[in-house]
Every structure is written in structure tokens, then in C-alpha cells.
Amino acid sequence: MTIIFIIKTPVSYAKTAAKPLNCLTKVYIRLRDGRTIDQTATTNIIVSPKAWDCKLELLNPLKCPEELEWEKINDAIVAMRKHITKKYISDNISLKVGPRWLRESLEDYLGTGTRYQFGNAFDEFLLAHDLSESRLLQYEVLRRLVLRFCMYNNKTHDVKDAVRTDIRTFTSHTLSSLWTFTEREHIIFKEHPEFFEAFPDKREPRQRGKNTINDLFKKLRTFFHWCKDSGIIPKNPFDTFKVGADLYGTPVYITLDEVRTIF
Image (cartoon, rainbow, N blue to C red):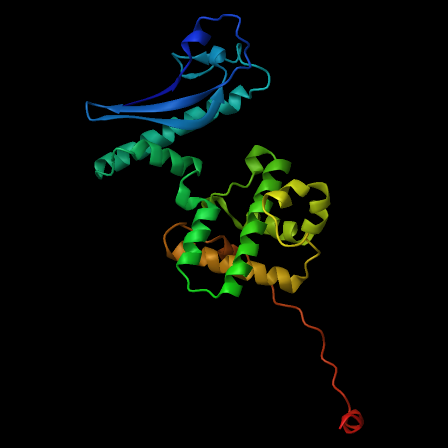
């Protein structure tokens, strides 16, 4: 069994020495095992062809453009090779290697598998429940909120802290960040209206009260409970994140004299 990383360089580019270094291309992974297994899949890694070392299957730092973080890219390739190798050995023993194995395994590893994407899993969740029209509308409000949060987080945080829409990556820390975003969205909207334009509600966001946020998170908790029970995620992030109790004002009771006055 061999796993190699390759790039597909156009013939015209290979013959043009003056081509700039900032011309980028995708990296592909190829799996071969005997005469029966020969699969290729596209990774999420983009490199400069002139900085690519075909023998090492890594970037040459001496030829790498400054804008490419060659250490992170090389580390990602090494980690991906290790994961795919380990998974293939395990799945091959249990006869789980089909014609789309490499592509599906890579999607799972990168978090791009369609079932694990928040929007797709949310659709599956709604279809599995017989909800009234009003309840469906409420859940759609939640969907748009979560997607706006992911856009905001990914634009304002480092890559290592970014929140992907892969629901398997959601943790209690992610939920805490979502809570803060939900509280402050009416402020964030003024700085980043593009998030709201991508996933708009009927009106611009206003400041939300604690009970409103609680209600949204209870719906989200129901969704993640279903994902865990359906085997989509191995762990429910709400296991270590608690939604607080709703807040209500202290009741004021009228006196007997006031009752007599009314009646």
C-alpha cells in the first residue's frame, strides 16, 4: 500500500520558467494497493508548484512564497498521510474499502462530509420531526443564527480557533462563543453587515434577552441530542454546557381593597 501527494501542473506552466511563484494549485492524494485499489482525491491544501518538492511530497521552504505558511502546510500533509494510512489499514482488515473510500475518508477527516455539515444535518433533523409551521420558522431562525456565527468567527479568529460548520467540531467552548455572539449580534451587525446579508432574518438583529437566548439554545440542544442519538456525532457538546433557568420578575399581589375596587 502506498500513499502519495501530487500536484497537477499544466504543460504550459511547466515550460514557462518566468511564471510567478504566486501561481497556486491544489494538492491531490493518491492511494494504491496492488492491482485493485487506485484512488485519487482532492485535499484542501493549496501550494505553489515551483515550491513543491515531488520527491519529498512537501513544500521546499527555500522556494516557497512568503504568503504561504510552509510549516503549517507541511505539517498538514504529514498529519493527513498518517491518518489515511492508519484508517486504511484498519478498514482494509474489516473489508470496508469501497470504490469511494479515499474520497469519503478524506471528507470525514477534513470535516467536509455532507452529513456532518450543520446545514445538512439540520435539514435531516427537521425532516425527522413532525413540526408545526410556526416551530419550523423558529428553527430556521436558529439555523441562520448559527451560520452567521460561523462566518463571523472564521473571519475574526485565527485558523486554529475557527469554527467550522462540521458539527463534530462543536464543543462546550464553541457553545460559549455562540452564546456571546447571540448576546452581541446587534452590535456586531453594525460592524459586519455582510454576515446578515448572507443569512438574513425578517428584521435587523436587536438585543436579545436571556429568556430568548435560552429558548434558542434549548432548541439547539434538542438538535445535538438528536445528532448523538442518530450516531452522527460521538459526543454531545451540551453534556458539558448548561443552559440557565429563565428569568421572571417577582410577582406583585394586589390587596383586598384593590380587589373590591376592581369588582
